[in-house]
Image (cartoon, rainbow, N blue to C red; front, side, top):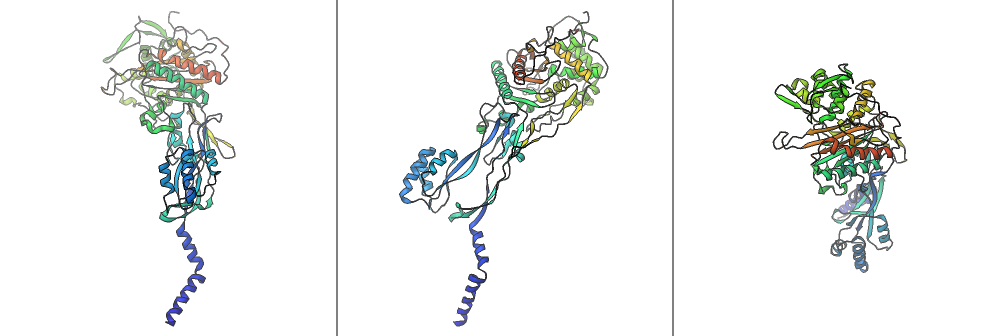
Length: 560
């Protein structure tokens, strides 16, 4: 007995004296765990700092059933139910959920509302700091910005693309584990401070973005269009607006399909139609094969191999200059220029202008379109591609083509992100986008005059004129393929207009696309009025002075 008692006594001395710190630490490890503390997600703002997506501080309200006094039970239930619009029966279940020590009652509670509750001093009722992602109404930028998930991670749009910058680093917090493995926030200890995410400043202008969205939606609904997009950008690639129709509410994204949420400006590929003619003519001018004054004999139709190509409207055989071919949007005239240029060189210019590859925006769901290699072109593909059929592009790619012309022949990769802003307000600009010269400055100036003739008295887009400003642009009307038959028959049309102003000193480019409008479907009728609306507003918003000069007389016909 004495030996046994001595062994017990020795063991007690070892546990309580010699190894006491070790056992105490082990016991603490069993009770404590480390959890993440949510951090503030960075805002997404327009170029002027106006929020397009932001995080607001909220409270997650909880109860500790063990701590609630019996005398306060009914008051706790009543106050929580009334203040946060909750079902009293459900609140009562949380209040009576012993031995649990942590029962969430309400989430996304405004701090002011929680403060009023806290002032009552009811024991066993507490709140944790949390954050909620909100999107200011009517920004018109949902298709660009995207949204976050339940864990505040970016799921679509720039929220997903820039998630590493916006998300920040969560903090660390020690929490005591109660009965049943529940967390007891009262017994916590801060282990690591959270690091807020950085704000992302875009090149978008909120006012122009909103107006472009409204103008596009109004016209698309008026014509019963299946969809559409509008882009406003600078010649140097900065995007001031990128809108889509139809759009969606990012605060309720679950009610929309993935197709509804897609950013049509980059996700919808279409045949560009006559807006593509500028590349064909640019290549021929750059290669020295023609001049703006070169006269072509242009019949209403011409046969190439087994296919007859026609202009949009019947006309007797004309003598058109290259200027006139552009202004009159002649398919037959453009085919003749394309035959001069040849398949290999035409393909080369299409690639240099940005077709068949990514835009550089890295937006989810981007469709680079279709541009086959010239060795795979069949007998009628050269004439088709010359005037914008037999290939497909997205709206951003085509807008970039006209930005290149407006920029004196230098293509700058389009960009949406201006830079980032840290917690101290310091702005770090984004890296300059890649740029390269595609055509000479002289060729770009000649094209600008041709495109200005399109909006003149003899052009196809008089609806694109803006009082006080010289405007250059191009209409486009292309057949759509019916997905059920795989042919153009019954597929409808894609109507486009893209241009820049002022024509003699370009500041802004606007691209408008309407998919399958009903009734008016020619680009000059359907899309040009939207261009005029958006461009007029953007010029005023950017305080671009009226042109102040008259356009020169441009020879369009060979007999002038």
